[in-house]
Length: 211
Image (cartoon, rainbow, N blue to C red; front, top):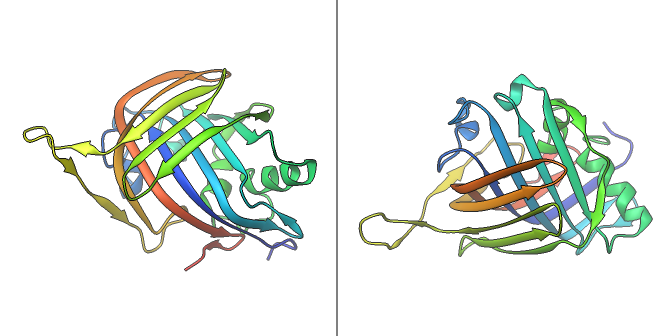
């Protein structure tokens, strides 16, 4: 067991290059054979040891040349410029998979697949997400800008609702499906258009999802 205990309750928006539904969630290979993704989160309530993390935002830009589990990934992590030095240190330990049981969280699992992690970026993060409405906006000047919205029925134009339920997941238990558009401009560059969008409530600790 890790010596330091931590917990975060957060709201998340993820946009990746796969088709709606994301094969990763079903242990299948990426739609196009590789993975590019941008994630934004806002912590509603959280701590790392004695350091509170309430209200702090963070984001990540990721790229893998194949499936995530095959490794060789690249990542850039952005931490809210409003965070104190103590909060920055605490959050970076969580996001890098430290103080976490092996395999317990998406942060720890992803950390084992990365070979190039850029220096952390401390910047203003403009982030809004409404899980139930499947809408989101994420903007970090000079790094990434994107938004999410519901999937639409191609015939009627009505909003289509679908969810993924993962009883034994390491990121979320239940996520709303949508779609997203993102332009990542640095240090990792790519563009996503009308691809997989994920909207979820996150409740994690050093031991995994808190049920």
